[in-house]
Image 1 (tube, rainbow, N blue to C red):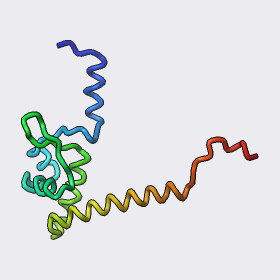
Image 2 (spheres, one colour; image 1 turned 135 degrees about the horizontal axis):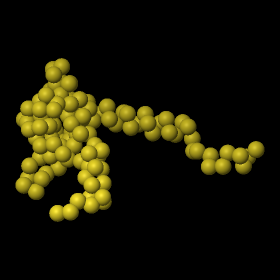
Image 3 (cartoon, helix red, strand yellow; image 1 turned 30 degrees about the horizontal axis):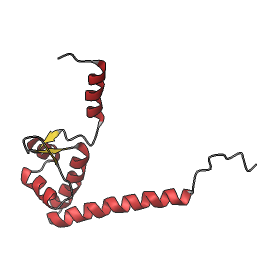
Image 4 (spheres, one colour; image 1 turned 30 degrees about the vertical axis):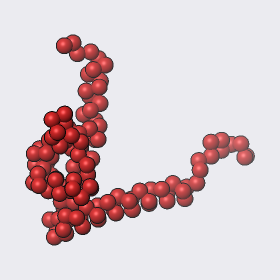
Length: 117
């Protein structure tokens, strides 16, 4: 198999892609200091939905692991898994609402600022 510049670029893009499902369940659990059962629980609560390999194995992205790690922090503080998942979802929704609010406050960008002068 010949490795071309184009195929190298495609592979390199995956290294930079936070949404690429690169991690197996065992590795993902190890990375966030949790158990595979915890990852299944946050999946069952639909906080994250892992992709599946051709063989049906769960695969996780870095973004999914960041979300799961936040839920794990809450569980470590005594919050039940389902409640932790709901809190993380609400935190994300609040952050998005704040971002949109800020955009709206700034108003539309004037494409031609010198036209009114």
